[in-house]
Every structure is written in structure tokens, then in C-alpha cells.
Length: 488
Image (tube, rainbow, N blue to C red; front, top):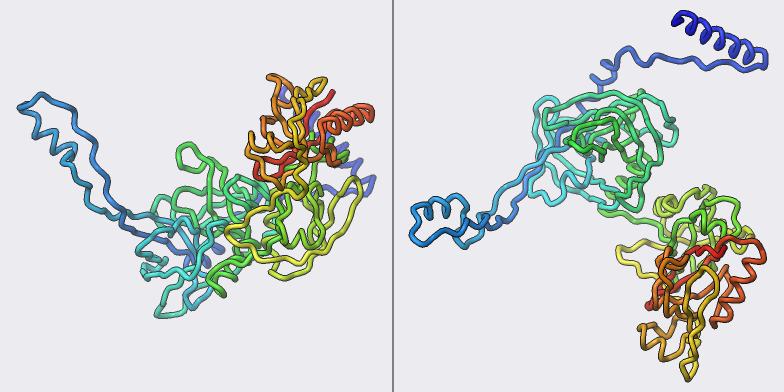
């Protein structure tokens, strides 16, 4: 039976190949992988360094000793053992190990920021046993990158960057680093995935690989089979700290841009669009009458920022930036940050079902950027009107945004709309975590000023066959967000 099964499988494959040839299709050649990477590795090992750091950390008080009866013969013993003498422990030296590599023969190294962060002393150890003290030229926390400089007595072996955009899932890659402090080690694997977002920062775009990456590999290079650096090994997923085949590297395209700025300016200078964005979920896409849940939804626009000056509005969905499609929200910050300050870029948005292209002149991203509050009149009336309860599954109790309502919920005068005063437990609104004090600014991209406006707009959506209503909500300070609430 086993033989019959194999024969049938082979015959089936033959039929498929014959059919493919008849249709003009050629089967791909399935390579067995490299026989050896010894020659490749031998030429790269001298460019990879071990990074050891040390820093002084303040001591902490010892664990309190157990309470013993007065005069106990064990009192002195426990006092010594638990170090419970009322003072702080002495400062101590802490050491750590990582990896890095040479990108300039004059002595420029690259590693992860977390490898050298807080270090008092940094030493780079080379493959030939040479140890050189390194200083930090610049570092970037957001991408976890750092540039170091050493003063060599002779030119060093340097490596160059390849194009990470050309990587394909299944391509062979090689990692060299310092796992567990053992020294230079080479591991081989493939690209498992690209464009991974692991929620480590605003610009996540990792290469995932099954080439073994362990503790101490951080900051080491990930090479393609041409000996070019196409990533920097920076993170793993592992319950034990050892490799389970899920490692992540920062793509060389990101690395080269950041490292170039750190070398030139000692800091990163990123483009800034001036919008606050959120994910386009399936519910929100349905509420916007979009065919698919792609793009980045603009929830707020910074007052007098680049987007505001160009005419981008809250409720726009950014679907393309400088000719590159924005498939998911997390892609946009990286695309914007990679562009130079002052560049004019075309931004394609979807506004109320229509595509518009808006040219934006990018500003400079600062560390502290505040989003603008919603504009508009206070919408208040002299007297507190009676509350209106929404019919159907929404489960909202609404009120005009009167002076009394503003005072009760602490809502700023700049916020306009209809205030939520109550939520029915178990309702559609409760499921979306609406809460008293939220202000409904728009329903399905139409401004509302009274509870009746909200009720009317929801009924219109029902008649149109919509399954959800897209609410633009403001908190008491005017920060905006979109929420799709079921109405059927």
C-alpha cells in the first residue's frame, strides 16, 4: 500500500508537470540550499565584533531578616545573612554582552541601542583578539540603533549594506554574533517573513528569520548570500531566552538611513506629517463604505502642522504616501519618518468615498508632539435640556452640550457635538467602550449638534442597509477617535 501511494503521487506530479508544459509553464528549480557557507563566513568574521559593556548601578537594601525573639542566639547570624543593617548596599558594576559590526574601516561600528544603553564603558572585541574602547557617536531609541567609534591601529575589515527590499521569503540568510558570550558564532537559516510588526516601537518593520539568534546576538549582522548586511539582529520570541526559530532583524534600508543621520548629525531627523491615526478595522471600513480595511484613518490633525496646512482632515483615510501604498496603519509612520524634512510629497486620501491627492510639505518630527483639539463652537444653550435616549441597540443616553454638561464632565469649550450621559450595560455602545462624557462630533462623517441629529443620522444609515454607524468621538480635552458601533 505504501508503494502504491508513492507511485500514485509521482504519477500525479507527472500529470501536473505535463499539463504545465503544455500550457507554457515551467516548474521552478528547487535548490537544495548551499552546500557550505564556510568561504562566505570566513571573509565576514573579522568584521563582526563582540560588544561588552559595564555600568555602575546603585545598591538596594537587603531583604529584611525574620523577626526573632529578643536575645535569640540566631540574631547575629540573620543580621549578617540578610544584610539588614539599615543602610543601602554599595554601588556595584554590572556587565553585559552583545554584538556589532564594522561599517567603516576607519573604526565606525553599528550595534543595538539596548546593548550599550546606560553603559559607562564599552569595549569592542575583534575576531583576532584585539580589544578597543568604543565611544557613542549617536543612538536612536525608536529604532534601537547606535553608532560607535573606535581608534584602530590598522584599517579594519568592514562590510556594506545590501537592499533589504529585495529579500524574498525563503531566501537564505546567515547571522554572526556572540550568543551567550561564547564568541563569534555563525548560524544559517531563511527569511521566514517580512514587514513584521512586533509592537516594539513606532517604526516596526522587521525581517523574521529562523537563523538561530540567541541572547548576545543583539546588534549583530544578518547577511545575505552575497555577504551584504540586510538586517541587524535585535529581538527573539522565546520563553527560555534561547532560539526557537523566531528571530527578528531591523531591515538594512531602515538601518542605513538612521545610521547615516546619526553619523552626520548625532541624532535622527525624521519627517513629520502632523496627524494622529488609527487602524481601519472591518467595522470602520463598513462604516466608511470602503471595499476593504486598508490604509490609515486620520483621527486628528495637529493645528498648524504640515497636514493641516495642506488640507488633510479628520476622517480622511490615507491610502498612499509618496507613491507607496499604505496597507496598514503601522506602515505610515515609518514611511513618513524615512522622508527628508521639507520634502513635498503627494498623499492620496479617501474622503467620503472619493480619492483625493494632496501635496504636503513635511516638517521635522520632535520628541514631544501634541495633537490638536477639535475646532468648533461650544454648541451650548442657556438651560439644561432633557436627555434623549437612543432607540434600538445603541444603548446611548444623549444630551446637548450645554454649559452645565461641560461643567459636569469637564469638557473644553473648543469641543462641539453631542455629549453621552449614559450607557446601557450590554449594549452595542458598551461593547465599544463608549463612556459618559464622550462627545459625538460626527456620525458617518456628518457633523451633529443635537441628540436628534444623531438619531436621524442613525436611521438614515439603517435605511441604507448599513450594519454599523461610524462615530467620531472627542474626549473632554478634544482628542479624537473613530468608533464603529453596530446598529442592526
